[in-house]
Length: 223
Image 1: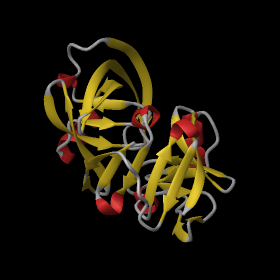
Image 2: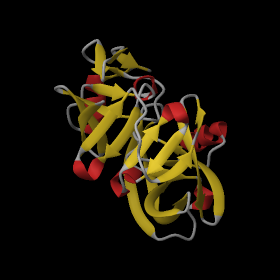
Image 3: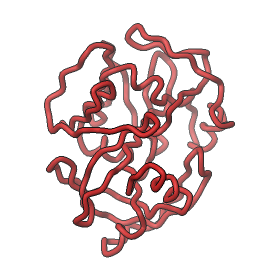
Image 4: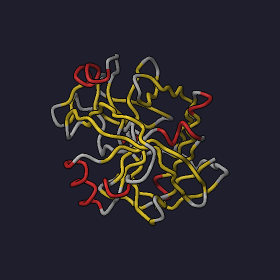
């Protein structure tokens, strides 16, 4: 078991391992970064210098602050996790980590976790993407909710874009949250359709409560 520092900086979740800072991204199948490899709780995962043409220096420029890379599911899925952003900590364990709370079953699409939820009175599937600073919904699900302004955002596979946002309630395993959701741009909407999902739950979920995450057991826990 290893206890790490978890930060909210540059509007993204950053996991600190040693002296290096990485974007924590459950929406990415792969990791990349500087330093050749990353080691946690005795497990070492190699780091290519780039992913889909995106390097650590290019990612730092997009974020507006320095990072040493991005940790995706080839790294994250090696461990059980307890993310406690309000207290600035993340616990990683290669052994089973017991976390008490509301259990949420997950399925996976190309290593990306998908959770069941309810939005606008509809039961939907939502990608859990800790690398997304903003959550997203199909445009049809965002109508009728209070306007929350526009946001400039980017995703490595889709580039930079501007999204109109709303504040909307969401239920996950009976737990109620109100998140800021963007209306999914066309390219993001196409990706959602390919995964059979109606939206993305981003890092705001971890700002709302501590979260246990056990990808090897297909389970999320809302603490």
